[in-house]
Structure formats: structure tokens, C-alpha cells
Image 1 (tube, one colour):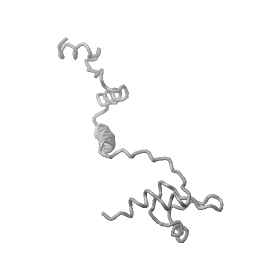
Image 2 (cartoon, one colour):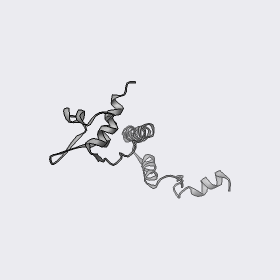
Image 3 (tube, helix red, strand yellow):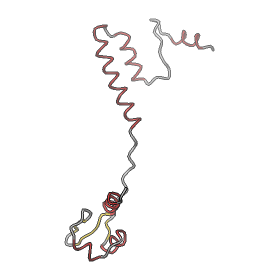
Image 4 (cartoon, one colour):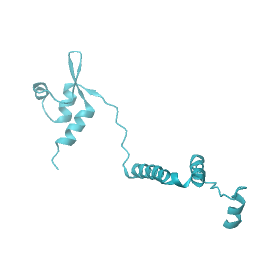
Length: 121
């Protein structure tokens, strides 16, 4: 069937053409655009521009990778990952220290973040 004939067949009794591939919610908005009073069209266009800008921004924004589950390392594992001595971990209040009762544990995710931020460019 050619495109013109298909378009004519899709037209409703009022002569309006529907788009069979369009999302149903957007089809409603399209129908509203056809019947909105002229005085309200600038507001409708503003709303549509906001929707379009939001969708375009989402396309341009890189998706964030899901955060890896955090593990708590003991002092030996943390020192090994950081390439330092166990004593040096006890001497400072590091941003990746997690207190579990009286024990000092070390957040693996925060250690990795610390290493990334500490590297020279």
C-alpha cells in the first residue's frame, strides 16, 4: 500500500491523521495541539520546548556507572592497596576510615576515590 493511501485510511472521521508509531501519551498531546485555542499555543509550545530540552539533556549526559558495592578492608589490606605501612594508616585521620565499634576499617571505594584524586595529571 502506498504512503498516501495509508495516510488517508489512518485519518479519522474528522480528517485528522494519527501516527500509529507514536507513543499513546504523545498522541494525546498532538490531539491537544490541534484543538488548543490560539491564545494558549505559546504556553503549549513552551511546555513542549521544556520537554524537548529535558530529553536532549538526558541524551547528552553520560550515564553514571552503578556504584560498586563497598567492602571494608582491614588495616593490612588497606596498607597494601595504598602502598604504605600499617603504622602510617594509624597515624592520620584518613577520609576512608570507617569505625566499626573500636575497630578501624577502611572503605575500599573511598580508597579508590582517594587514589584517583591523588594522581597527578
